[in-house]
Image 1 (cartoon, helix red, strand yellow):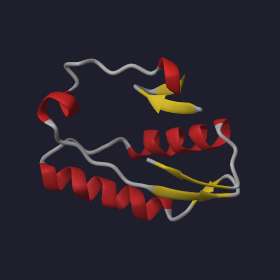
Image 2: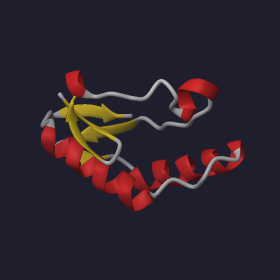
Image 3: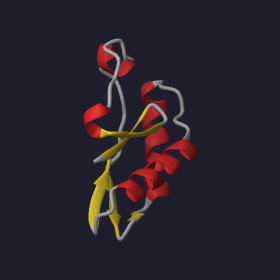
Image 4: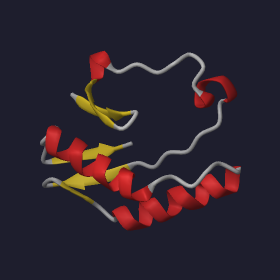
Length: 87
């Protein structure tokens, strides 16, 4: 499985996060679960709008929604499945 970590695709077994990562040390963070079908994310714009709203609600910086879109496309392309979900 290929995943998106720190700006690029990685093999899941090779992905690493620093023990000093803000999300790990403070415990705050946001995420969305996006259904995929036939290589396309469902309602991605609505999910991204909610992601940005959630970040603002926690006082976190706005996510780079263009990068999230690129990441979603890259992960879907790297892991072809009929039905799936992104987080």
